[in-house]
View 1 (cartoon, rainbow, N blue to C red):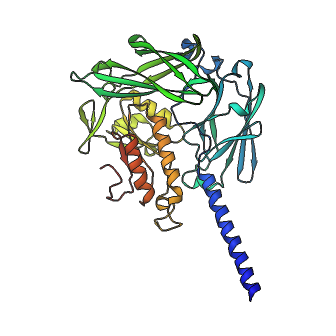
View 2 (cartoon, rainbow, N blue to C red):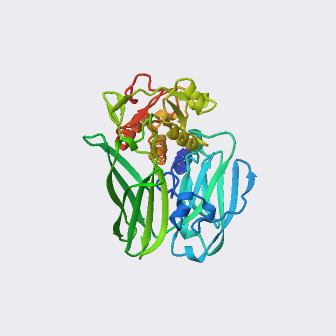
View 3 (cartoon, rainbow, N blue to C red):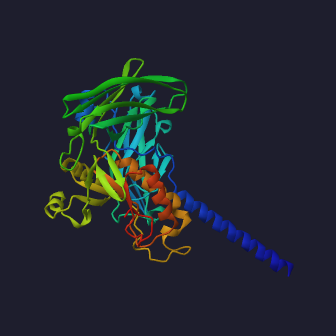
Length: 434
C-alpha cells in the first residue's frame, strides 16, 4: 500500500513538474525579449543631406548586408546574412531592425541569441552591440511556425523583409514625438519630444540641433538643446513652436512638415535624422471626433476589401481600417498624403478560434495571453503614432470578448486618450468607442 501511495506521489509530482515546465515554456514563447521600445523606422546618417534623401546605401552608419540565405528544417526556417562592422562603430551602438517577419522569431548574432519577438509583422529592433565583433558578423533570424505565440496571428507564407543593421552613438536619439493643441487664433502650439538614451558607462553630453521645415524649404522653427546623461539613463529633450493653422494636417489640406535633428557629441556630428511629420489636433467629445476643432465623421472601408486607395475614395469612403501587416506602412503613408483617415488594427485575430471563453478556449478571455494583447497593441501604437492620418486602433479581430479585451481597451485609452479605440466583437459591451 505504501509503495502504491509512493508511486502515485511520484507520478503526481512529475505531472505537476511537466505542467509547470509547459507553462513556463508557453510564457517564454509569448513574451518579447530584448526588443527595443517601438518607434517608426528611424535611420541615422552621417550628414543631413543624406538623411533628407533617405538613401541608406550612402550612409556610413548603415551596414551593407550580404544576400540572405534560407534553410528549412521541420517547423523552423532560418534566414542568414552577414555584415562587416567597421572600426569606427566600436564605440557606438549597433542596432538590428527586422521590418517584417511572418512568424515569431529569435535573433542570433555570431551564434549568440540576442532577442526574441513573439510577432514579427509589425517590425522590431534589437540592440546587438555586445554580440558583434570587428569585421564580419553573422546574423540569423530563426522563425518557428510551431510556437504558441503564432496562435494570435500568423500568415501562412514564411517571409522576412526589411533587414537593416545601423549604428547610433552611445547617447542616441531613440524617438521623435509630437503633440498639438490649438490656441485662441486656431494656430497649432506644437511640442516636440525627443527621447535620448545613454548606453555609455560614463556620463555623456550632447547638443541637439533641430530645424522644422514646410515643403522642405520654409523654416518654421530652429534651435538647439543640451543634455547630459549618466550611465544607462534616458531623458527627453523638448521644444515648442507655433505652426500656423494653414500648415496643420486635415482631410482638406494634408500638409506635411519635416523635422531635421543633428546630434552633436563633443562638437562632432554623431548622427543626423530626418523625419516627416503631419501635425493636427484630435479630440473626442461626447463620442464625436474633431480634427482641428472641426467635426469629422469617419466612414471607413476594410482595406482587404479594396483594390487600392483610389477605389476607397471613389466609393465615398474617407478612410480605411487596415491590419498592421505586410506593406501596411506604405498604405498609411499614402492615406496621409491623400487626407484619408486610418484605423490601425493590431495583428491579433481570434475569429477562427471559436466562441468558447472558458479556460483553454478563445484567447480573448485567457489571462495567459494578457501580456501579448497589451504588448502588441502598445507596439502598434508607438509604430504609427507619428501619422496624423491614424485616428484610432482596432485592438483585435474576433467575435468574443473577455478580460484581455477589457484590459487592452483601458490600456490603450490610457496611452492615447484622444484616439478611437474599437473592437468589432464587443457586442454592445463597453470595451469599444461607439
